[in-house]
Image 1 (cartoon, rainbow over the protein chains, first blue to last red):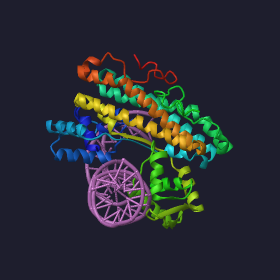
Image 2 (spheres, each protein chain N blue to C red):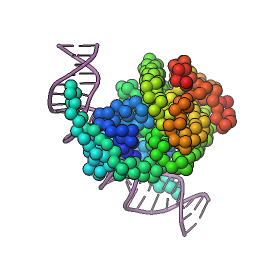
Image 3 (cartoon, rainbow over the protein chains, first blue to last red):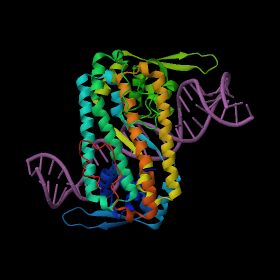
Image 4 (cartoon, rainbow over the protein chains, first blue to last red):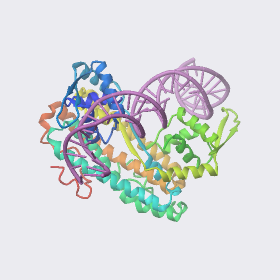
Length: 202
Length: 202
DNA sequence: AATTCCATGTAATAAGTTACATGATTTA
DNA sequence: TAAATCATGTAACTTATTACATGGAATT
C-alpha cells in the first residue's frame, strides 16, 4: 500500500490537485499516514500514465496554475482491488518511545523537556482535530468517523498516560532505577481489558 | 534515528548477536520499532568499522556459531549523543485505518473480517506483552516500564474502541452513510481530556 | 522587509524490505 | 518428514525524504 493507493483514495472524495491532496493528508489522515510532495507528484503522474486518473490544467488568477486529477472508473476499481487484497499492516515507529526506553541515559532536564514537548504536540493535534471535526462532521462517512475517532481515542489515552507517568519516570530516573523494583509497572489504570491485565499490576 | 542507534541501545543491556538483537526488538520494542535482519546485520558491521562495538565469534555446540557484539565506550557516547540531539519523531503508518477510512468501499464481510483480525491481533500482543512483563519485570528500567506501559495503554484503549465501534461502523455502512449524519462522532466516551472534547460529542 | 501560502516537479540521497544463499539441530 | 529454530550475510528492489529549482501573491 503506497502513495498511489492513498491518492486514489483521496480522489474518491472529488477532483484534487497534488497540493490539495497533501493538505487533505495533513488533516484527515494525520493519525495514520503521511506523504511528502516528493512522493505525491510522481505517484499522480504514474496514475495518469496507467489511466487510473485524468489530469486537467486549471488556470487561476492571483494563484499559480494547478493540475487537477479526477478518478476514472478503472481507478476506482483499482482502489477497490487494492483495499480488498492486502492484509492490513499497522506500524508505529517512534523515536520518542525509544528515547523514553533509554530515559536513564538522558539528562533529567532533557527528559523532562521531551515529555513536555510531546504532551504539547499531542494536545495541539487534539485541538486541530476538533477544528476538522467541527468543519466537516456532517459530511463524514462512517469510516471517516471511525478513523478519526480511533485517532482521538488513542491520543487521549496516550496523553493521560504521559501526564500520569511523567513524574514517576522522572523521579525513578533520579533515584536510580534499582530503587524502583517495588513499583508496579506503569500501565493502564482505570481501563483493564477483560481481566487480562488484572495480574500485571501487582 | 536508524537501525544503528537501535543496535547500540540494545547492546547497553549486554553483549548480543544480531540474531538476539532481532529477538529483543520483537518483544521489548514491538510497540514502537521494527527492523529486519537485512538492516540489522549491515548496521552492526558498520558499527564495528566505526569502533562503536567490538565483535567476538562464539563457537557453539549443536548450534551455528554466532558473532557477539559488545558496546565500547565510544559506542555509549555515540548513543548518548544520538539520543540527546534528535527531536523525537512519532509516526503511525496504518493500512488498517486507511481501510477503515474507506469502509464504504469494502464488502461488508470483508470489513467485518478485517476488524476481527485486528482485534485478535491486538489481543495476542497484549498476551505476549504480559509474558514479557512476567519474565522480566524485576529487571526493567524506569524507561522500559514507561515504554511498555505506554504501548499497553494505547493498545487497551484501541481494543476497547474497536469493540465498541465495530457494530456502529458495520450498520452505518449497511444503511448507507447518509442516514448516519445524526450519529455522534465515533470517539472517546468515558475519557474526555480536560473538557477539550466536551463539545464534540453532540 | 520577510515570511508564508499557493503550486509543480525533479534529483540525489537515505533507509529499509524481501528474497536469496547456506546448513545443522530440534521439535511436531 | 515437514517445519521451525538457530545463525549470518548479500543483492536487488522498493519506497520515501530532503533539498533544489521557480515564482507570483498575500500576509505580518
